[in-house]
Each structure stands twice: as C-alpha cells, then as structure tokens.
Amino acid sequence: MTNAQPPLSPDGRWRWDGQAWQPHSDLSAPGLGRATAAPPGGRWSRGLRLARASWSVLRSNPALGLLPVLSLAGLVAYLLPLLGIAAGLGAFEPSQRPLAWVLAGWYYLGASFITVFFNAALVAGAIAHLRGERPGVGDCLRIASARAGRLLAYALISATVGLALRLVREEFGIVGRLVSAVVGIAWGVATAFAVPVLVLEDVSAVDSIRRSMQILRDSWGESLVGNAAITLPLLAAGVGVAAAGVVGLAIAPALGVLILVVGIGGLCVVGAALSGIFRTAVYAYATGQGAMRGFDAADLSTAFAVRRRRRGLLP
Image (cartoon, rainbow, N blue to C red; front, side, top):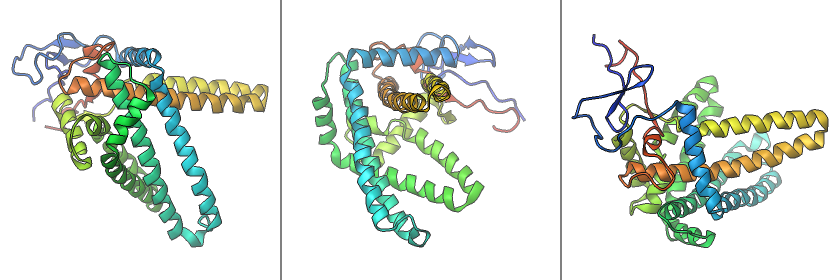
C-alpha cells in the first residue's frame, strides 16, 4: 500500500506538504502556466482578499446590489399570497398533507425561478463590470430575460432536487437528514457555475450542469470539495450581527428585533451580491479568461480546494 501524494495547487506549480506550499518541479503537472505564485496566507486571509475584491466591485457599481434586493422582494411577494392560499385550503392540516406537498412544489418552482433569474442578472452585470463596462439594473434584467426559457428549465430541475431532498429529510429521520445534507452539498458544488454558464454560454439547462462539473474537474480536479473561501468572512459577519442582536434584546426587545431583522436582511442582500460577483470572477478565471479586474489569480485558484486523501485509505 503506497502513501498518498500531497495535493497540488490548481496551477500545478505548488505542492502542499501539510504545513506550507512548496515548489513542485513536475512539468507535466496539469494546469501548468495558469499562475506563477503560491496562494499567499491561509484560507481566512484569502477569503478576506476575495471578499474585499468583490466588495470593491459592488461599491463601484451599486446597481449590482439592487438585484438581490429585487430578488428578496420578489420572493416575499410570491410567498405571502401562497401562504394565504395554503391557509385558505387548509393545507397546514395533517389530513391535507398531499395538498401541502403540491403547494410546496409550486413554491419551490417559483422561488427557484425568481432566485435563478436575479442571480443570472447579477452574473450578467458582474461580468460586464469586470470587463470594464458599467451596466445598469435594466441592462442586467434584459440579459436575464433573453435567457428566461433556459433559466426556467434550470429552475425546474433545481426545484425538483430541492423538493426531493426535503421529502427525504422529513420522511426518513436522521438518516434522511444526513443523506439530504450530503447530497445537497454535492449538488451545490456540481452546480457552482451552472448559472454563469447559462448566461454566458449557449447551452441547455441540463448541459449547464454538465458544463459546470467539467469546469470544476478541469480546474480543481476530481477530489473537489466546495469550500469557497469568501463564505468565511460572511459567516463571521453573521455571527457579529447575531451577537449585536442578542445585546440589543437585552437592552430593549424592540431594538434587538430591529438589529436582527435589518442586520440579517442586509447581510443576506450584500452576501448574495458578493457571492454572485465572486462566482463570476472564479468562472472567468476557470474558463481561461484570466483574473478579472481587482482579483488576484492565486486567490482565485484556491476558491475551491482539493480534498486531501487519508493515507492508506484511498489510492
């Protein structure tokens, strides 16, 4: 039984020895030539740099920040009437469980389409901005509208997966929750670039998923794990908002509720915008377009990580 080799960086020039990146001299390594420096710092520092780069893009073009606001407003406007219909039909009664699942499926489809549509608009705006243009909200929405058919098809697939995972989670106890979590993470990784592909490449909804997986395999290898570093600063900000809300609740309940509602809502909007910008920049890098303005290639190369194989367990 042979020892597993340490993982390579995506550009093939560096090897992780367990403590630091070391130069790798194997000129046959895949991806050679895409980057020339080891990713500096740890995952947290790289995440901060990626978040700052995304924030710089968002700050210089606030129109990109309006798209998650419109998405959130659309979801609320869609959900409230649906809840009223469900209540009126008695869908919350245990005897009306089939009806509840029908309405849940309808909700998943509509919510998925709204989310995907505005994500597509954000991708369109981000790629235009990163290429030196200044798109407005109307420009972004027009590009997304031109692809509404394929976005709807993808939303149908996404909604079906989401509803199936919810069914497994609710009907099969702790095993169902575990399976749902694992499959959900795998689905999120596999579709990481599906929306950018739908916006920027002429492919169908099904092919966008295949293309997303191909991009991931070609850029980060077969043992990919989804740990986009930008999520770490966002999670830290969420902890800060929660802590401020708890303090506010101790001082005055109304103040605490206001802090939580405004803070969490604002963080969701900003987080969605930053994630969309970040993912677009990673997509551009992974598809050979290079590091877009404001982003460093070494940081983008570590947006996803290669799973370190346990010695003696995997070939």
